[in-house]
Image (tube, rainbow, N blue to C red; front, side, top):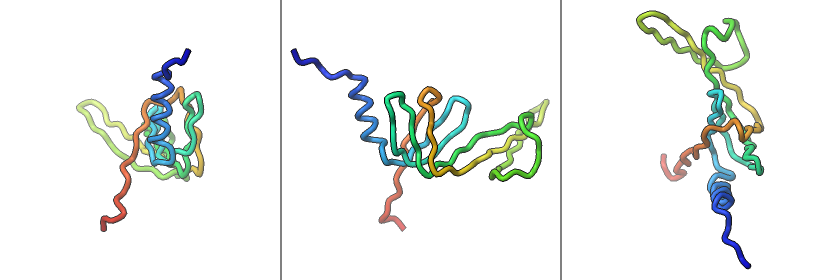
Length: 117
């Protein structure tokens, strides 16, 4: 007797078709973001990104100020009682594997209109 397709697997296949070979932004549980071209997805929802840029916010209490190879952007937030400094550390990777269980969200980046100036 024929059975109906599993809605979860149908949704996964549709998602793969919409996102595969597109530029995406992945947010991980620890606050990191990874931006790159999605080239593969496995059954555990692990993602492979090409030409990936990983960014994370490092708070002042978590780092020792020195000259590092990573590109950093410093932002300072002042409240009535404390001042905190944080850096956005980024690195470029040719390929990155993003663990499925660590994913919070995956967003499709808008494509650039090639006819626009």
